[in-house]
Amino acid sequence: MQLDFSFQQTWLHKTNPAFKFLLMLILFIGMLFIHNPNFLIIFMVGAWIMYLGYTGHSFFNLLLFASPFLLIFITSSISMILFGEGQTTWFQFGLIHVTEESFYRGLHLGMRSMIFGLLGLLFALTTRPVLLFYSLMQQFKLKPKFAYSFMAAVRILPIMLEEFQSLRHALKVRGVTYQKGVKGFYQKLQQYVIPLLAQSIRRAHRIAVAMEAKKFSGDQQRTYYYKLQIGKYDLYFTLLLISWVSITFYLTNFISIIPIDHVRSTN
Amino acid sequence: MKNKLTLTDILVTIIIALIFSVIYKLWGPLYSTVAVFGLHIDQLIYGMWFMAATVAFLIIRKPGIALLAELAAAQGEFMFGGQWGVTLLVYGFFQGLGCEIIFALFRYKNYRLFVTCLAGIAAGIGSLFIDAFYSYIPDLALWNLTLLIVARLVGAILITGVFAYYLVEALEKTGVTKLVRPVSSQDYQALEDEAK
Image 1 (tube, each protein chain N blue to C red):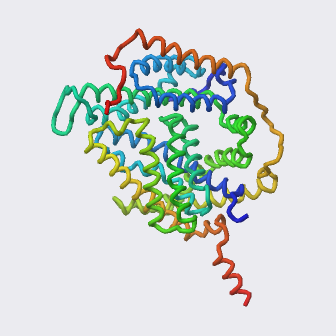
Image 2: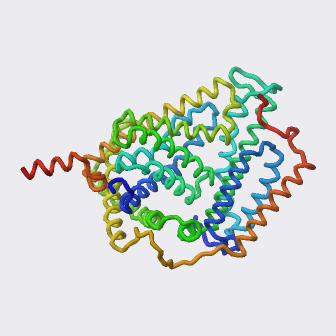
Image 3: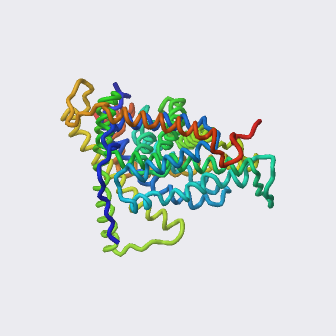
């Protein structure tokens, strides 16, 4: 199957990456203090609308990227649902003890993971990593040596992949066979991981020496190829988030899908 | 200025971290598959997520490396579209901080297996700290919570501690670590002995 990953630029692509990142972080910290599952349900609807409507990727691809979320939803909630504490028992079998409180708390956790998964993908799909580092340097005073190291390191990864391929072919040509079980795992580790790691450390070292010679390590005032600012799209995005959160708060007063508005056990 | 991070240290650390972030990204689905049962078997492999910190520190042996490695690995995983989004960075920060504190307590001069295992445990505690807020783990039944903590810490000791230690030991044999480590007093001694 041929996958087409082309996409259209939306206004979210034009926001300042580092600023967008900061907003996401603030949102995360704020979410830690939300214990009302109804809030999350309404907020999640908004997250899906944002994710499906404003990344500029095709609907099919978006669903494909989002497919792990079902699993995440289950894994984040299952142990709380089955083994959480609560008073109103719904079901009990051996160690499994499902209560009303723990069930809703589990759902709450699942939704929380899903929201951050969606927002994370929204960010990843609308941000060019290179620009993220440029804006971190320009707007948030990240030292250039960290930013450029990171960008260089990202470029080394494909080379490693090639190296991995040739290593595999070389071992195949030599007719290497693997033992079964733990021994085989150890053997593979020795034959793949060690040379790959060693080679990439050597390569990183060589590149770093070259970069130091070109003064990428300098912390003094420097010029940038990409110039980024905080502009009107960032204002839009901030306003969008603020209104999104306030509308959700407002609607939570009227819409009550889950008959509980505080999921923490009171103790 | 022996202990200041140079560009070489940073680049090597980030490379190691990014290699791990690819592993982390692949680890996510595996972890999720194991986690479906809710009995915390998944926690035994959780320690993999702390490994960048100890491996990078054991290779480069400078202050700040563990934290930087863990943050960079989290950032990498985030950029590759890791399934937990921005949460990753907060976890990464506290896990790296846990490791960093342990290495700092030994004044960054102890690289034994024991210390590496301790760093693993500290990273585990760092992650449990966020879990208390993010995943409400104190609201689990007591036996289940105990199981979660024990499984995670055991996993951390085995993977972050033991596995990382022997991985770096195997790397040392290739001689590559000599490139990136700061010179120790033993190296000076060896030079002087040679001069005599």
